[in-house]
Length: 114
Picture 1 (cartoon, one colour):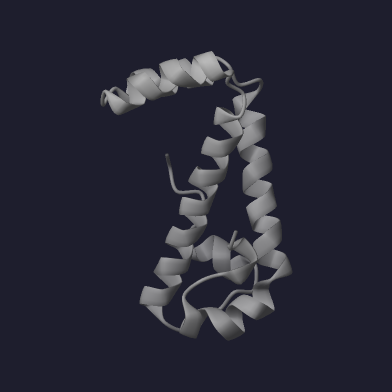
Picture 2 (cartoon, rainbow, N blue to C red):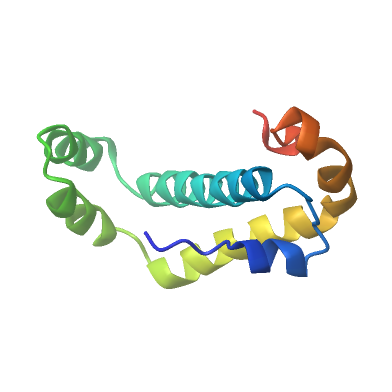
């Protein structure tokens, strides 16, 4: 997956972390969270039987085949991906002050904790 979140994108939301390593780590967290959410969204489209087939492919190391298999069951995957991107951008924009204050010392985002 291509990284959607970049340092520039995060800065455009008013998030200004004055430490390059921590800023890159935040960008990585955002991209990891996006991949996780897209995966959950896509996998939720599978029936139990389809999930078993997907798991077999995935655990056999056939990640390309597993991805191709999965995508056929997702209605409008591009829109679902865009929705997840928009949600994360919204969460970041809504919490930018918190991120600026807390993230440099905690290196985690409590609003994403499950």
